[in-house]
Image (tube, rainbow, N blue to C red):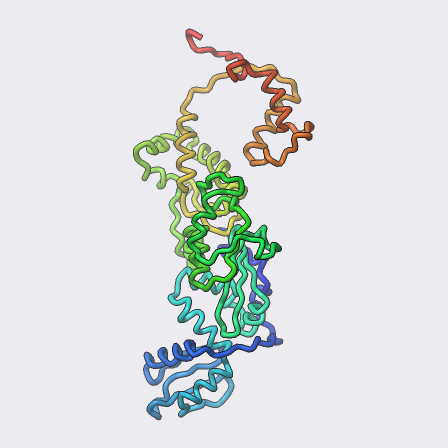
Length: 402
């Protein structure tokens, strides 16, 4: 199985490696809501329990009613602190307190959202000082075709800018800006040419927009709107809990018009599934990394790709395409005879490759050396097709009556 952690090559930090030379932490205030959250959390603790931050802990003083204790790493225990004293002590450690508040209270429960937002700034590997220094400059992460830039305010609040990766250097004023993550529902419908996108993880997300200042929850909701369930499945895979439904068991669940796919296990069986996976699940067609195989015991011969999102079962696009191909493959093969020059054979191969790889728009009209050039294709059609648009081949084993 491939490494479930998305490629951090675009991240500003050095992968979370901690050094002894800690960067200077940008000056951070201690907001009243963060301090109030600490007091509320302490109020829920037993007298001998502590809230633990990076490098220190606080709690109630069991020997002095209404007082607090602070346990700094490497220093003597401080007891009998008044609320004012505790505030002053925490204000001196504001970055670590606001970091606790950002994830414990603003982001909230353990799960995909928290894991994802912590991954963005490598919160499980880098110190607060390292992360806050990097956040002050902006930490960049890639998630599919999204470019996510995380920053921190002087109150320790996280802010996230999200845009298309190909718009990285475009001034935000030149982009269509949004502040509601649900606006992404319209963005993901069509590609840059106005064509419907049936597969949300296809590498065809259109450019020209930005969400310049989102909070943590909105940033997560935006990512889930653009790429549904990708964070959840990424998190399951990291935790070792990804449940994979392979081709065979998925097809056994199909009914009605899709039940015909179950009949596609004749002969070598999974050879046909290899063709489906090669056609639909290549990196050029989908950003997911295919984790499903033919069945629990039988792997496919086609590589699953390098996408950052694990694909746990054949998607609706694959199932729909497989149904069509099942019907087409049920036709009895026939042998046809064509007369082609070697160059024309190579040209037909080039046309199929260009269409399959989505390169038609890249071939210039003036480049007649390219086999899939439009004018060359039109010349070949004029030469080989009849007036009804049929390729003029001759069946060598015609049916009776033809």
